Image (cartoon, rainbow, N blue to C red; front, top):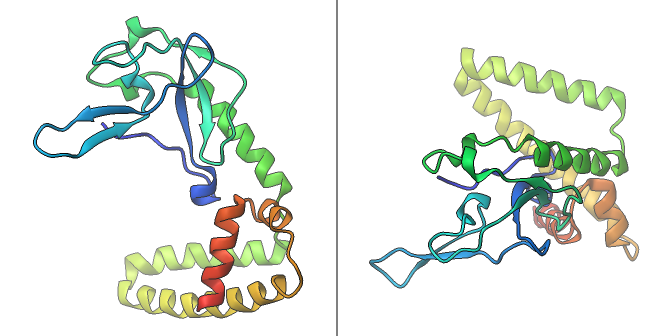
Length: 193
């Protein structure tokens, strides 16, 4: 079993998950498990490991958690009786998911809107490249390479424009739907190319 992360259009800045909540309202520290044959310890924050066994505390609820640090206010009671220990990801976590999705919707509303014509063109390119990948995969790869070159050049030009004055990194990050650290990293990446 692996951590189930919910993905958004904002990449690592806004990945979500169901987080375990203890009786006092806190989230437990990551659980460490000895792999047995080396000095490496397996570390996880998967909500289902906090069942009160193997040295972990027993969680009473779940809440939405986002990689940006946001946490949902609403808690959803865990009914351990209905959790299959062999398939805990079958447990219904739609409540935390819906709360996280609302958070991502707020993030999206704060971003700079794409011009309608650009949004339409992006959708057309995606549809065409998807079809091309099935019909002529080498042509699709060539098109992707050309697109990557265009993206690198345009990204560099836009990043230079943004960085000309003393940038307000918090405002720029909000407009891009990123954390400040991810925003700086992205603009740095564009400037490198």
